[in-house]
Amino acid sequence: MTAGTALVLVLSARTVTLEDAERSAAAHFPQIIVADANAAAGAARTEQARAPLLPQVKLDGTYLRTTGNKVQKPGRPTTLANSFTTYDWWDGALTGNLLVWDFGQALNRWRAAQAHAVGLNDTALATRLEALANVRAAYFRARAAKALVEVARATLANQERHLAQIQGYVEAGTRPEIDLAQGRADVAQSRVGLIAAENGYVLGRAALNQAMGITGDTDYDVADQTLGPVEGENGSVSLLIDEAVQARPDIAASTSQVRAQELATTAARGGYFPTLTLHAGAADAGIYLFGKTVPNPPFPPLTYGMTWNLFAGLQLTWPLFQGFLTRGQVREADAALEGLRAQRTGLVQEVWVAVQQAACAVRSAKEGLQAAEDVLANANERLRLAEGRYVAGAGSIIELQDAQLQSTRAAAQKVGAEYDLAAARAQLALALGRR
Image 1 (tube, rainbow, N blue to C red):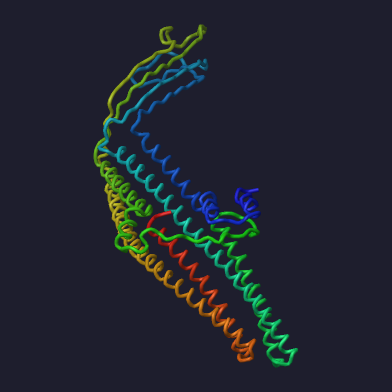
Image 2: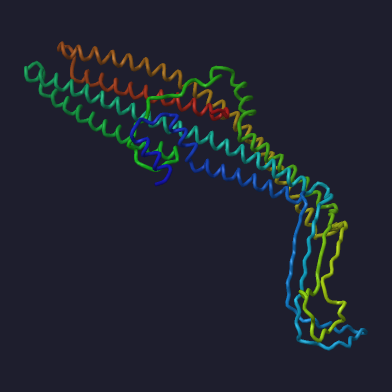
């Protein structure tokens, strides 16, 4: 059983709140897990980039079973004959290297990796905020679908009540048979509407499962929750934009990427200059006999045994010409830097538009909700009057049917307006970089 499935089994016994959905998305949404993994990989790459700045210590050991024949060099002949006699040859060395100076190449690569890791952390935060906005939108859609089910049920109950009244009037002979046929058709249509609304609620919860990052059935209910006002939603849009530019994690990530590329460009330019490295170590090598004697030795006895040495020194490496490799690397780094700067500028421009759109959407949704409430109140009053006129014999079945239809539409419109406001506020919070 997966963690997501286990969560669904727990939630199936109760109502899912908005906080439940948000926690589930934070724990299980795949894009968040990927972003967190990328951030962890960035931290590991930072550690790798720091390695060249620290001392490098290496231990080498070699064992050979070898013959001891000397190479015959021109002008220096040896009187020793070749032999198939073999010996134990031991060779060990402990060496240490330390980068002294490379004109900032390794240091800037490390700093670039650090900046890149910071950017990945900001990207992970931006992914979390986006997932939070997505799960909120899915939650409010499911909540709206649930409210539409309630509207459809109320409509069906009202139509059934009308049908019972009409049937009584028809049986009493005060209303024509056509009114009864119309009433039955209205009840059937209301049942179809209820089925469609219930299916919409199921699909809404399925989409909510996906936004929560879980797999399972939809055997749960959503709470009747909404999103409260976003601080500053009625204030100046310019102030909201300034806040967004400072607080948005995706802009912070883009800024870190620009900084990382600047350092990488500086490191690439360091390739034009030499590198100075300190070397030191100890070595021990020779034929170790372990107290044994060598029969028919090809060398004098003094050539047997282990010989140790110590060494230390500086190495200067200057790649004077590498086929314009460094120049190509610098040009590539400069081009990448220019592209990242342009991306950040474009992102800031997108933030301006996103905040303005979200702020306008919130204000429009608030006005729309107020208008929808007025429409619903008037539609319900019209339905009440139409019911009274029909009972009194002054109104027709068509008038009653129209009034009921308008009441149902007004109720659905109010549900949509409530969803629009909650979704707009969630989008404004995302545009501002807030939770």
